[in-house]
Image (cartoon, rainbow, N blue to C red):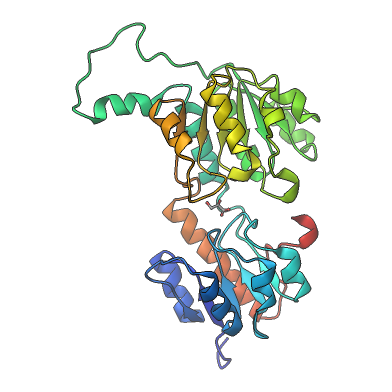
Length: 333
Ligand code: DGY
């Protein structure tokens, strides 16, 4: 971009230092070094001036906001895999391109999901908590701290995209048999590799699984996909793991089932009203029924740097006059 005016890029949250440094070299980058979340008013001010907005999942880029964008705003390059925080249709209507950062979060999120699949049945947090206080422990006993075996159980994956498939690969190595529900059946080679069973009917799959892992995106079609009615189909010995988005599960219904002993447990990295966490879930966590994490499924330094790199490549490509990779189209959301 030598000789050209650098695009004004507003980045809404603090990014890893190497990403911010490169952004400053390449762009007129407005950083948020204090990492204070921007209010809607701050966002309005930003988009009235900026050529590019780099939001994250904590920003609400809705139609009302997009409507107020200034004439220079041509690109919203979200540092995220999910785009449920952006009204992509409203952006398209205003001629603004939206991109995301898929692929680079897949393995990290799948690792975290696999960790959670193990954590509740094997009571890892409960065990760690025994030694956390004064470190006192009555000693080993054949009937103490018994969890449930993972090997040989059935895992039902809701959403067999990139992350769901990466979870399946890990889970297969742990001896779980792989089942999945997806809008489309995956390629036969992948089914063969994973020895996976496809369920066209989510209801039928739910009723037969030992562990459910939610790995689909949050869209209007997946809102409360695991509704009260569907959760009630699960066996009382089943576990639910969610590293996707909180609103895919009817959280109140899930809590009620856990409280009533109608489910064995849950491990949640995401919540319906994030960053608020339902206090009932916190209580259940204290009892060991639930493990809750503060949305850290993709939180690795390498992952965040890779996401930042993707955003940089997107902005460069766009201002070099090319169609950027990872465009999010309204009809694909
Ligand atoms: C994303 O980018 O969508 C992730 O949920 C962030 O962890």
